[in-house]
Image 1 (cartoon, rainbow, N blue to C red):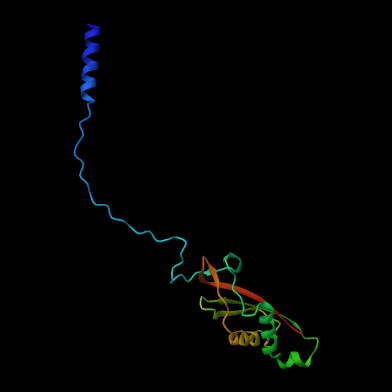
Image 2 (cartoon, rainbow, N blue to C red; image 1 turned 30 degrees about the vertical axis):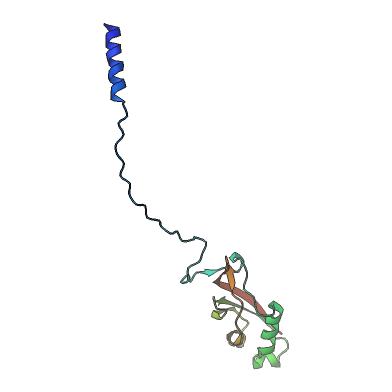
Length: 150
């Protein structure tokens, strides 16, 4: 009896597991074009730090030419020009845009007497820079400078 029950159970299990393939409907698969995640979007207005870009922004002729430009065009305020002991540093930050222009010029610290306003004026005269890039695409980049007035 036990063997008969086991045999019937085995046959029932064997026939219930039989593979009956169903016809498969073929559907057209749409190809979706993936956009590269490495490419930057044209409207990406994120400002990158100076050190986080692939190629850093450059002044035409190099940073020494930039300091020469600042020194040549900076007119010391009257009080500073008259008193040799008045000297100090002016710290400024700016954004170098994708097209190389300077924007959002801010004087972070100055020593007074109009020294910060004069540096801001000179930075607005500055020619276009070569912008920083990530993966060959130009990006906005934050740049800070100290300028020493003597």
